[in-house]
Length: 202
Image (cartoon, rainbow, N blue to C red):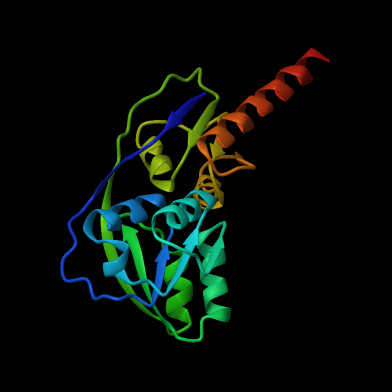
């Protein structure tokens, strides 16, 4: 097995309109990037909506309470569509953000202020064909992997549902970690190959 990542870098923000009433974060990178530019007092978030356990945990420790969290961007978009009466949000994202959430909100006449607060750089590298399992921690990691590698006879182990959604477009076998953490992905890999080996021993 091998893990596949991409590199991220925060960018300097200018002229951000604060305070912000309804903030959306779909990754830890966005949270970390925004905190490079502003203090929580300056941002003045009233409601924070996010995707993923790791992002939720970081927000709670660094910024404050969360109004609602979901396991994927699509699920969060559907929740906001049904429950947020004031249809105006500020979406903190990267240059390679996915379309699911903005698409759902735009179809429901939301006003979306997109703040690009970090850049993701792909780091493609060829890996040996002997690796049958690949660990992915973001959709951009999958994008990077695909530039120089094949998915044939390989299993994609994903940290969460958003990453898995992209993986299913390219891999025949996709497994999502029960716990959205690096250790959770590694435990899932170990369990998978332990069971695979036991199955061959029978």
